[in-house]
Image 1: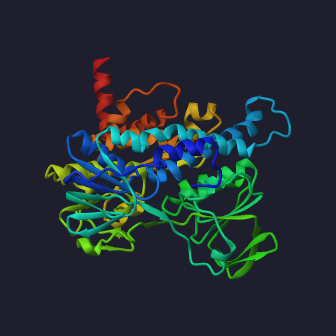
Image 2 (image 1 turned 120 degrees about the vertical axis):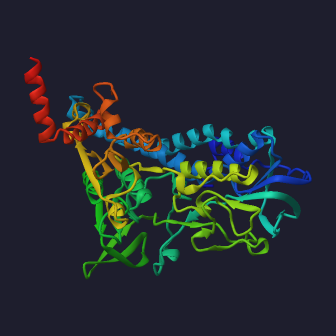
Image 3 (image 1 turned 180 degrees about the horizontal axis):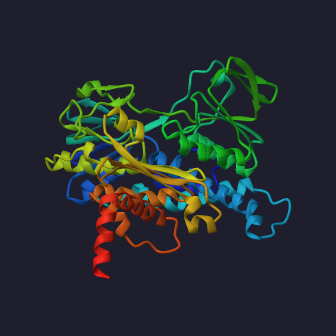
Length: 500
């Protein structure tokens, strides 16, 4: 997991891969065998067992998967600590005097992360799932036939199975990178000293989040991206707000750059870049790579079970069925949406469809997501370019936080809410929130979409004043004003003139 085997990591390991754990004896044919104990696997196993199914759960490494051990939990602990540092740094803007020389105690930051992670780990522990009635097996699971799975010599028979083996960090093919050595999300949380100079390769969500966190802790960070902008999935205006914030934190951003090679030069790690036809060098102490995820499909014996897969993961249909109708797949190993909350939602679909002849479809889901920079960028539904590609005519309503009282009071006027509706209606097709707590705010928009509510409903919804979420009501009011056409306005004037 990492090199710091302190009391907190010992507690974590005792929960998610306890020493001396004895695998149970197989109990005949299982209703469901789940391969992988990350979010999708844990939700599937717990949900199925709670409904009365006989369930086996197989995990090769640590229960909790990436989210608990090397993903959501540790990264958000670091992000929160870095936000506290930024708040101290910027406190003078609020009339708060801060002593000069305030710095980050990086070992204490990392210890806090390990303590919080250990405290959360009992929820994902082997003991908890055993107490839920799940047979927990630690070892390498491999299909040996269409309805059998081997775990280190023990054969498990199943009526249905769910593959939930997740994904792992991938790295670009850069000459010399492997020899130089680099960090990913799988080992960066094992650091105990702050790297003075850090290069972050990839300006997607992970790269931007950790680049900002380490910059706020005191690292001098260079963020390198091959594409024309950071956060390439997001609209340019949203990415621009985040980019300005990263630059204020002292991050050097290099977009449109290709890394030619990596090498060692004494204690330094040197990246050679090609940017706009010219070469440049970046010298750092550490390199953090955050360029994507690769599905864990190797060594599972998928061929033995007649399960189709490729470089994108296990192939499934809209009901999460694989080419073997006994076997389903959920989570990062079978989804383009590699989010913990999506893995949870897919697991629930897998339970219904695998055990109860359900017909739930992945395409029916409305999936929001959030990048936890400061400010955050949250999105749900269609982007403007996606609507255009699909030939859907839209109208877009924008509310900047510079005109929202609470955002001004909070000193957070940058950012906006942007909502797309089908032209001529108030039906919401998608939207983006750029704000410090955008991840908390996007659920109002997601709920409106799931519930079939429109901008008119947002206009009629009372929001507490002052809150930043009041921006939703302002957008609803903006839509209502579009309905006051000259004809309607004239009719109102006549009516009011007649009734006075």
